[in-house]
Image (cartoon, rainbow, N blue to C red; front, side):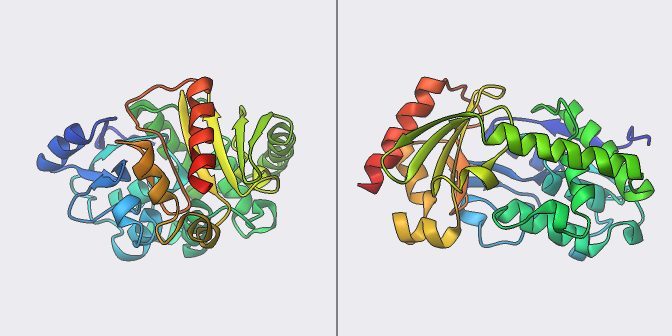
Amino acid sequence: MNLDHIAIQYTDHMWEAQQWVSRGYEAIECAFGKGSVMGPLNMDHHGEESWREGVALRACRDHYGALQAKPRFVVTGTPDADAVLAIIALAGLVPQASIPMAFADLVNRRDLNPIGIHLLEEKYGEELLFFQQISKLHRDSRSFFRAIQGMCKILLDGLTEEQRQQAKRKEERRIGMAENCLMEHFGGDVMLVQGTVWGFDRWYLKAPIIVSYSQRHSSVTIGCVSEEQAIALFGDTGLLRVFDELGQGWGGREAIGGSPRDKRLSIDDARDVARKVANILE
């Protein structure tokens, strides 16, 4: 698929995202701590915008093809399914009929709260797994283009039986790796994890609050098993209270979020964060 007509600018800085929006670019999930940079379509749902539905669901349902004539986007973070599907829908890169709303709904549910969602048991779960298993996606515009091409191919061509079996094997391997990574407990409710795969769905079986360190991205993600549990533990705003206490640049949603996009952290930094979260609980 030729994507030469699409412009994607990557940034880790709020001020730079604002500059691109002022030049007519639509911001996709450009959340920086408590604040978000948004264009006319309001494509974010983090921090103070956490009351909104996910961007992919809204893009597919309400704004399909809205930017087809001039597809220009500013992005941040790793290209996840929510952001990538939103770009595909807004740019009209595949026919609208090729995007099942059940797939958009699954992407939305998985993005908001993965707990209790077993993709191998979900309709379109294997398709979402196959996308999530695209290798070497980094925090840059080139990775967004690769992810867009990969998802477009899934939507247009579907998966072969061999690809479905491959997705299942990789998922089983991910689960095994998630359950055997380095884990450290801080009090009864907080667990620090250093893993090479995404594994919150497995880690939450061991503790309600996870501090996950990514050596690949030198970043920290903090998650709680559910929004209801986060509010029960930390008060009405859940983890948003924790992010406020951790300092500028920390942010996300009531039940998940992470470290400033423009800072590189170490595993020792992650341990300090885990201690702070445990202290806030006390």
